[in-house]
Amino acid sequence: MRIGIIGAGSAGYVCAIRCADLGATVTLFEENKIGGTCLNVGCIPTKALIAGVHAKRIATSSEILGLSASDVKLDLEALQAHKNKVVDLNTKGIGFLLKKRRVMVYDGHAEILSPTEIDVDGDTLEYDKIIIATGSVPAKIPGIDFDGKFIMNSDHALSLTEIPKTMLIVGGGVIGLEFAHIFSSFGSKVTIVEMMDRLLPQDDDICSRAASKFVSKHGIDVILNAKITKLFRDGNDVEAHIEKGGETLVSRFGRSLIATGRTPNLDKKSLMRIGVDFDKGGIKTDSYMQTSVPNVYAIGDCTGGYMLAHVAYGHAKVAAGHATGQKSHPMRYDNIPRVTFVDPEISACGYTAAQLEERGIDVSWHKFMYMASGRAKAEGIKEGQLTIGVDADGRIKSAYIIGEGSGEMLAFFSQAITMETTIENLEQVMVAHPTLAEMAVEIIEVATGFPIHT
Ligand code: FAD
Image (cartoon, protein in one colour):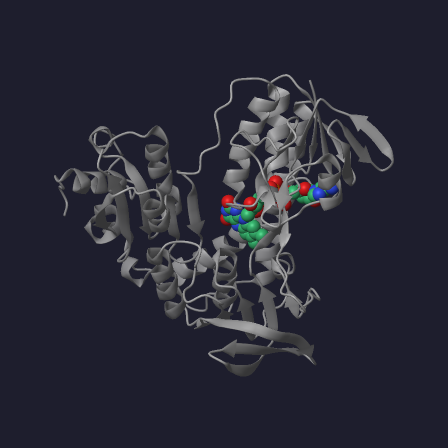
């Protein structure tokens, strides 16, 4: 079986590795860098910068643990060097994994000619199956162009070498908030402008409330229900026209970042040529990631929906199994973890309240506070909360954790939702004491009606 995969981001490289392990002969086409968005300009570099920000916060706010530190400085150049090294190590690592599997990596722009043919730099190569993993690009605001310096997208913002005194971030979603966290920790006065009536509008209210608390704690200004009508460079600043409630506010900032989401990266001409169904939301697939053309698959951000690296991995494994004719399970979306890496992390998994309502699923809600955890107290953590929604059969359908280490703890709930196990079974899980993860079992006890520490 010969498989051609276009795009070597989270979706494409994982799919290539899995297809090769399942016995296929694989060619992976990449016109830019192996690792795509996540490894080069997304998940990993942002988290490398956030690691520095987090270390600074620990150093400057741990008096309760007897730590007094003065003159703590976050050195942007050193942190950027750390970030670049991490990116380099990760992308080289993926290159090695692909080589080990004998995946042929083709450096160039690939175009689909027919459901079995890919053109790269004038060469036409034939495949039994084609997998499209072309990812996404930063969304634009009509009439406003990125100049990479004064008007940036997330790719540009990751490489800043100087911190502006003031920063406008357009978009109060995950990416906007993570950059607000980074820049404000470096001392920039950040203003977020969000079109909707709350931050993190794509998730539940509980996450939005946590985001509001985060911004006010960090002195980040937020203008909700507002949109940018004009944004342009003026000398060494940018001028922003912000429309809110029929009025226009004109403000100046040192730099601006547009973080209004991402758009599927589609080669519309090729898709139309071979008859693959798509719209502006992305390429349409069934639950095995097959497009409307049976031997053509689409995976990752180019399919729209949840644009997350772990969703791309999930798509990749499902498509690889199906395309190689091996056992494959359909893709599911009821267990998707979502983390906003601010301070503290805002984490959620499973259905949102709106999705529960759409599906007619009734749940009972249960809470557990970090305050009741021995380990949290020992760490000096004062705030944090877990919330879960459990259906009438005792199965967890939703989980939210706002607090230190919540992204890690979320794995417990993703597993519980995936296994469709009941709270009675989950209560038997042993979690080492004393850990923050114990709270995952403590909240299960709350749900069973027999809490110990609350
Ligand atoms: P991509 O990674 O975009 O890869 C697509 C690849 O295809 C690219 O390398 C591109 O060059 C290549 N390509 C496109 N067309 C062609 C062609 N015709 N020929 C050859 N090559 C082509 N997700 C998380 O889960 N957690 C996070 O913390 C997180 N943080 C993020 C932070 C930022 C700032 C950003 C921007 C994104 C973040 N994401 C995060 C999202 C995550 O990065 C994406 O969901 C993920 O990278 C999608 O993978 P993909 O393979 O679908 O697309």
